[in-house]
Amino acid sequence: MKDQLIASFTAVYGRAPEIITRAPGRIEFIGNHTDYNGGTVLGAAVDRGVWVAVAANAEPRRRFHSAYSGETVELPVGEPKAQEGKASWTNYPQGVLAALPAFGLKAPQGFDYLAMSDLPAGAGLSSSAAIELASALAFLGLTGETADRETVVKIGKHAENHFVGVPCGILDQGVSGFGRADHLVFIDCRGPRFETVPMPTGTHFWIFNTHTKHALVDGMYAARNKACVDAAKTLGVSLLVEADADALEAGRAKLSDESYRRAKHVIEEIARVESTVEALAAGDLKAVGSLLTASHRSSQYLFENSTEELDLLVDTLTATPGVYGARLTGGGFGGAVMALTDGGFNDETAAKVAAAYRAKYGASPDVLHMRAGDGAAVL
Ligand code: ADP
Ligand code: MG
Image (tube, rainbow, N blue to C red):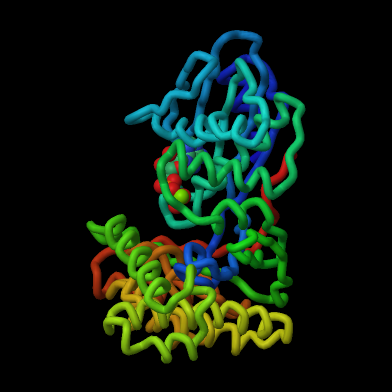
């Protein structure tokens, strides 16, 4: 990919790049809707990502090119301006430019920029965080300024929250920033605090992306967020992470049945993240798998952010040899299912799962086989 990136940059801009960076996408391993409740989450950086190449150009212009749109977008230096339509992908690197001053850092002046990727966009693997972090490292390379890993993560999140306008939590950028091959990233969202946790050897991630999306997904996400905030208030805590199972039962009479189930999902999910860390340390993959599937069932019945399509994939996967566990990954209401498997689960088994899905829904899910890879880096 690096050679291809240099060749492509040279073809577009007539000279070689000065700096090359790469940042990975991520999988939400376990910790569903826990981030905005102050909880913990485990994610995996994947071995696919976005590469960025840049060179200063000594002109009052910034040029952005990506094979994603096939076009070069030319913008004047100075205040980043949000773009619409085909050029809207530049809002990710532009959002990073706009974020840098908020962290006491300089935005580079004129430059030429090229992005390339082997990570599908919009598949729930957070290509947006990948392009943000790869861009942040590239721009720091141009100005010669340095920032620690946590600041780079926060710059990416700032870009997504404030310039692109997506109210994501710290998971996406945190995992892309702190990922490590054959490890998971543990995030305590209140700090935030980041740690890596070794992944037992011989495990594999398989993603089945349904490409389905509930028509009202943004509104439903917001409704779940509000239900959690309201339940916390009723239970007398500022965030659900401060309530445990006993506190929930003690306050049950004050909650509607729906609020109770939403809060129960979050409180138990935070406990499942802790149990998963322990099971990983003990090398107990069966227990890890059970926790993953329990997380899905909780989404299905308590939080109600699963769909029929995702449930079918989880049902099929958990009945397939070689699968430790499976769950929806990400916000839910459509999207993708992740399975943790042993090495015996292969393309053929995955094709059978896809065929079962196709038999019911007429369309095939995209199947991706991935390993836990390294976090964002200058190459
Ligand atoms: P996800 O983060 O789940 O992949 P998002 O909708 O948050 O989905 O982000 C996808 C967007 O990120 C794309 O629509 C595009 O604007 C931008 N993007 C991702 N990869 C690239 C790339 N290689 N080049 C340019 N833009 C990209
Ligand atoms: Mg995204």
